[in-house]
Length: 367
Image 1 (tube, rainbow, N blue to C red):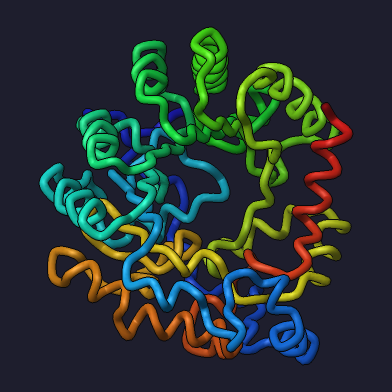
Image 2: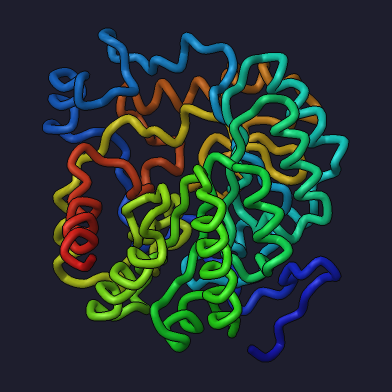
């Protein structure tokens, strides 16, 4: 791909499109639950496992998070068509200082955090100290996982990752063919990424790895219906004998209204199913996410600065987690009052995830 500039660690530093308006005029805002959603909120606490008998988030009782998602960097080796990197990069780009990471995992160990996940807005494998970060997390007794686009995951990296017996390794390959991948990822690294994933899975089988694997693509309109089925069948075979996630593709969400343009590529059926979904209290705001610069982010699906609820360089992690800004989000979802939040434009969470059900049906019959 022409005109792509990289830093010395392999992160793309150029943007090929202008900053989109945070709140697209074409994106409808949902300021509160509708009548049926309010009835569901009162009548179906068992369906929504996040809430207690009083309709409050159970995580309110936890003074510390069970899971911390960390972004070692917000730079990436791809420039996916569905990624709102214009917003992700708006406040600057960089790599997490190792000393800051040490602060996070020390706190996590002391406060009985269960999991550390290297999965936020960038490609973790381009951080020069990523393996030191993984080793320290494991040394602290934390279950550790990582998400990657596999472009930099050559044989040496794959062998290293497998040696750690991680809890999970998630890999994205946005297309069944090279052309589909190029349209989805906007980089010409299909053969390399596919080869890297195949090598890792082959070695995992040889080692009888207990890691849980995930190979998927995001259905952003670049993969044909026929090739969706081929993708599922192909990677089901490659994953056979391993512990793996059976969801092979995901619907692109609108990133809290910043990617309303992506929905325009959806099929008529998908648009119809999306309109029939019912909004509910969201799972994504119950944990804690920390970006490369120390920003604590309420939700992995909101790339704007409004989702920043504090910075661990300025405040204690426990004060941010139990602070007023996070509680505002919890209360909003409990009551269904989204007027001041980007959640009003988000299309991620629902009681009846019809698009997810459709995807599982395709996955099942494609194997």
